[in-house]
Length: 215
Image 1 (cartoon, rainbow, N blue to C red):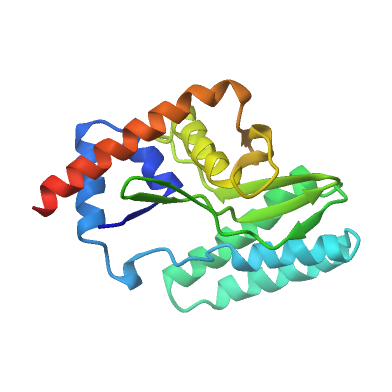
Image 2: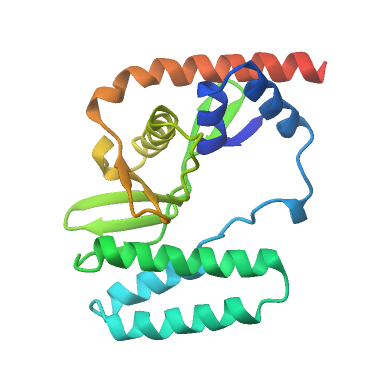
């Protein structure tokens, strides 16, 4: 069977202990209902605002208007989940503007990219694809939790790089994890080449554990 997993979940699996590995396998075999998952495109509104901001030649008045709209939408939200999503998008735009508002780059369509090994297919699709001169930068947005170590993030970025390099002209440093809560940006490093073996080993372990559990 084809085992589909995100780069983040895979990185958590590889860097986690035995209990984390077991819980990841259980979740893959018995996925939660769609209502219980964070839907794809969680930061869609924030990304749309960022894209329009650059398309308008870095028009800060546009962003100010959109932030007011997001704030009003959050106050009018009828469920905690809807309110949290709107506040997360609000936070993402504010953090992005603090870090990158002066950059004259173009947000482009995000490519769908995957890294496959054996039965494992890992999604490496970014949240933002940015054309910076002749360089393409791929950015993953998120809120880094305390348990998410630097090693876990670096492994996730390496998976994204290996998924991207077959189709796109990117360097390891062009793959970035951006923490929308703190504004911290963590980029891939050329020295992380050794993680390719770690990724292959992780795919084998995940495949074996799933096949045993599914038997």
